[in-house]
Image (cartoon, rainbow, N blue to C red):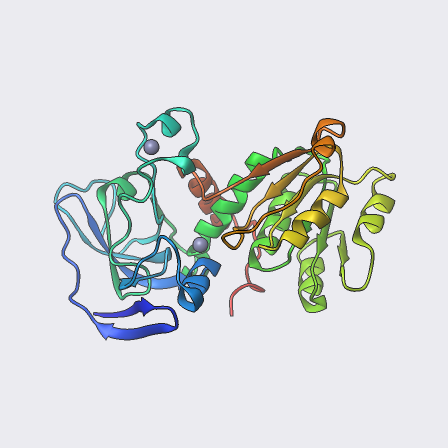
Length: 314
Ligand SMILES: [Zn+2]
Ligand SMILES: [Zn+2]
């Protein structure tokens, strides 16, 4: 079969690899679509501290089951599925405290060799909790279950409540999904800021109530004007830049929460006035990855056609 092999920064090649064999507890999936995640792009451009070449990237996988191990139950050959890139172990300290994305053994099993290949093996643990049927859903949409699951996980950590006002900084594909999730979760005002006007136009089309371009206007003033002078209840920083964090801090209200959703370049340092946390009771939270519940909820949202992806698929 053909695979896109990552051999080092700026070095990827389509190569012929042996078609993988499955054990009696595994499944073989023919890949019909695989999303290209920012992590993949960053790895290809600059390398990644944990992803070592040579390997096959791609973790947003949708496809069709073509072979099942003899012990596998509950699936049939020919079924359309989405494959989670990882599933927590269920028994470590973090798993037992429901913090699944921090599982110590999260990456122990993964679809082999990776999504940018013609076929992937779904290992046993993923088969149990991370292989979901997506009949009737175009594979290009089904494969976006993983990034959407990350958005749901972020919203959980942010503790978004109905009627909250929210500012999302960054209107890339993740920002566009986050804004739709915020709407679905009942946010009363969804504001989006981005440096590119064309992205803001898409955000408006997808339901953003207000959009701002920080290169042209004072975002904190706009946010305050819309929130009786307070600032947003919740802020999501969906851009990996420290400037976006300071913008988030200047837009959140007292007692509000700022979520650091994206990753930041290694070595990034930010300055915070501790009194801002003490007197203003502002909360900082992070979010990484997703739990099996986030993944299955994301799949459900996609199956019920609650998220519009057409502007994100090119
Ligand atoms: Zn991803
Ligand atoms: Zn665990």
